[in-house]
Image 1 (spheres, rainbow, N blue to C red):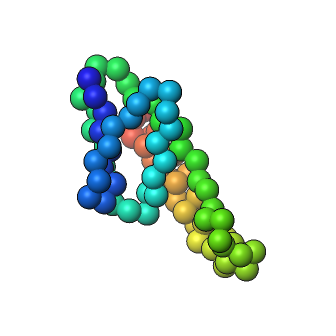
Image 2 (cartoon, helix red, strand yellow):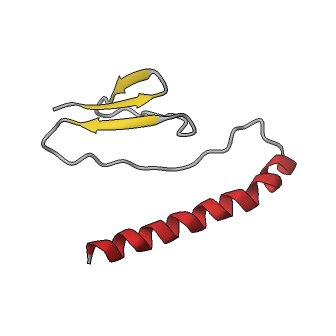
Length: 81
């Protein structure tokens, strides 16, 4: 089976042993047509041209997103119980 990802209007596939990096600020969608589960490691990177002032300005929004993610995780866990 194959796995595909669409980011904006580009569609790509994964290659074993290689990394796939994309900006999830763009509309994206993933398909897994294989029989094996797909495992993904997510992490966030700051754009290197952001200044310390830029990062400080983004920090409150970043904390709110993190809190929202924790709330969503708790809700999903409770829904499965």
